Length: 302
Image (tube, rainbow, N blue to C red; front, side, top):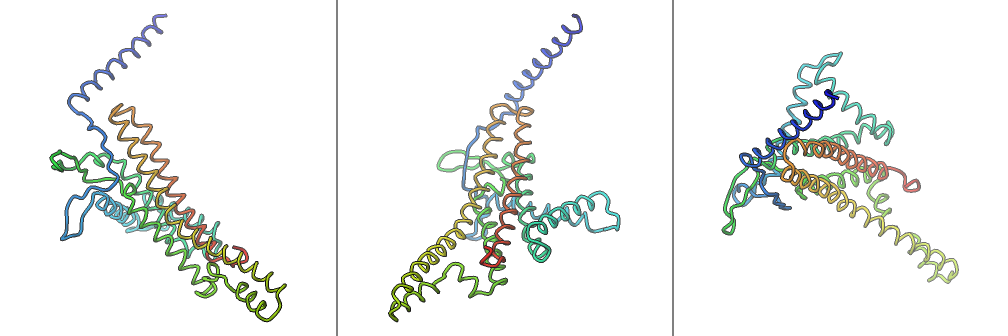
């Protein structure tokens, strides 16, 4: 009975201590009221070219990835250890993923694009969880109001960054489609007018019945081609707003939880965002790989 009481007293004491620390933190280390700004904050200008905080974060991501891979590969050994072992495991996992989906012929050809997209997206997502993001910055006046502009903000929360990655994915998909089939044959997937023109010619030659059949089939194939073209363009939009929406929502969630329940209570949401960042990177590179495979596949299989 005494042991139980002492245990309960310990729990109460810890809870009271946490409440006191929380109150002290509220007074001396106040969390700023969450202020959501979808456009990135412009910090400086080089001539007429604006430098935003998401742009600085993207440069930081590139720098961090470059330094990590430099440190892991500057003294490579036959039996990898430490950082080299970790990097080789990551590269081998992505390479095997590409081989399993695209096959040995195209897997290694698609690997640089898929790996770059995965590493850049996940590094952007995870770096934005480090202390300093959205908390280190400048106060400045805007229309008579004092506004805080963070120096670092998650690059994935700027719609321009997911859009740029989506355009890279789109360009490489179309490039490999043209390279695998040739320009004329690949474009036939979108503009297939052969049966439509053949049916029209047969009607003019008096073969009305067979011409109408060809004409009907030609209309269907032309319509399917237009739908295919629209779907290719819509991929850019879906890629962009899937990544932008999830990353922005996660940032708002963490910022709001830090304001409502500071410090330790917000840690589970950091774990959630680590998982979401991995999933978004995997989805982005995985869909890019699937679309690359579809682009190089024969049109009959496609």
